[in-house]
Amino acid sequence: MKRSIMVVEDDQPILDMMEILLKRLGYEPQLSNNGIAALAEIKRNPPSLILLDVMMMPINGWEFLDWLRADPATKDLPVVLFTAHPSVEATVAKLKDPNLGVLLKPVTFTELAKALEQYLGKDPATDR
Image (cartoon, rainbow, N blue to C red; front, side):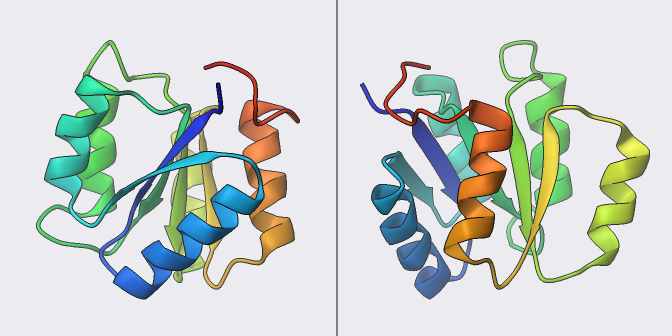
């Protein structure tokens, strides 16, 4: 069974591109353009990792992360913040969360592969 990666992103072209890239890397994408809907889906079908946009509505990535970390079932789920704002890296460093990373937009195929490997290992076909 392929590992699933949830992408929470309110920009549809970016969501579409991430779906293509994740499939090429051997992962099963779960896509959501709404943070509230994504949180509900995670409870039903938790992914192996979440790629999370920071600037989105109706809740932003930081609020989403707070909800995720407050739930014992998802508090250790790996999350890679997906943002165009370099200042997010400094904020993440202060949090000292070993299951939290940052990818700066625009992301390359190689950067995405490296980030996923960092949190999930090399074999995308491995079970969760």
